[in-house]
Amino acid sequence: MIEPTNTVNRIPIRNVWLLILFASELYRNYDDLPKKYRPGSIDDSIEDVVAFAANLLINATERRLRRELNQHFERKTAEIARVRGKIDVLLTERKQLLQKGLVSCRFYYLSVNTECNRYVKAALQRANQLLSKQKRMRSHEKLISRRCRNLAARMNLVGVVGDKPRYTGERDLLRNRHDRDERLMYFAARLIFKLDLPSQDSEDFWQWTTPEDKKFLSDLFEKAVAGFYDVRLYATPWKVKPQKQQEWPVSAQSERAKEWLPIMITDVDLVNSSNGHRIIIDTKFNEILTTNRFDELKFHSQYIFQIYCYIKSQDESKNSSICQTDGLLLHPSVGQTIDEYAVIQGHRIRFRTVDLNQSATAIQQELLSIIEEWPR
Image (cartoon, rainbow, N blue to C red; front, top):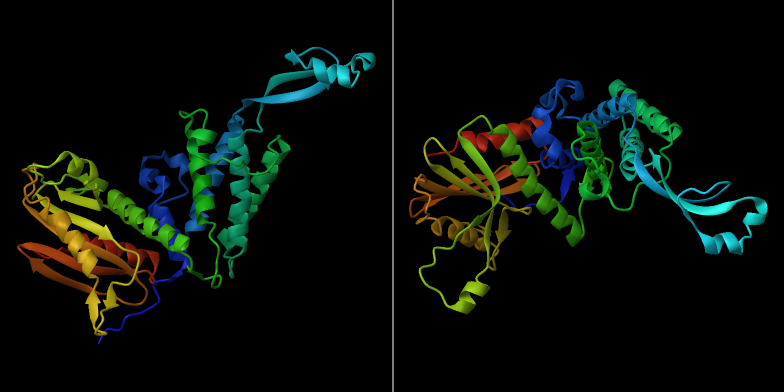
């Protein structure tokens, strides 16, 4: 008999890193990068996500340093011997600078000490710390860690000084959006900071305890599943549509109902262009089984109602190419695999777990087999 477990909140941190990689922009766009940027095949590096991300950051930063780091105009106030920019009259008079042959000026100058460059330098330092924290550093990890330290020191020598910037969004840091090297540096640095998770249980596991942790992991699991299928099913007839808004099959409604009817958004929508088969995936980051008031093991009833609503509301979809719609409730697990289904009014609803206590290669194979071996 299968017993309910409480281990879904005790996931190997290396596999949390794997989910972060699947959800990242770099994973989706890795094959589009020129070979000079890539440290190797992503499948060869999937078991060592931190080293993979650090290698990407090193390659992009070294190329940027060879060409010279981007410079932006920075604002500066200085007491100088000749006028430059605008004179700060009040400060000049207050300090009686004219008697000393000086004047206080505010001006702009070109500097490599940009927020993006400081962000990248901080990421190199963080990557070095992440690699150094591991219990047993392998020879290639020691080499990558040393290269991160050296690159951070080089950036400091050329004038990139100061701490990580306060605002780190793409719009805040990427001034030149068409500079491929700087974009790659930024996205690799952002991936490094996302991998910097607090290890609350030990150096091998991340045990979440707060509602914020659970919300983070729930969103991460959804984005990771969408990102993985988007990349791995790209060359197949399956088309992946994350966060797809579905239309309610409303024939008539009042004004207030139109205003108050909630939006229906599925986590991941898969459509097979060759046979019209559609799979609506709803990801949940908790145990797949729960106990009812009679202490019996059951699937979560509200999740079944939700996926059933998603499926049946699309029966009269305007998309005439859809021939069959099924549903998948996908949960993570640790050391346990459940794969059951029920056909309700011609629609297959599948209850499936992904064991996150496996190697990265096994997790990939399991996710792919769910779709490739879908029962008919």
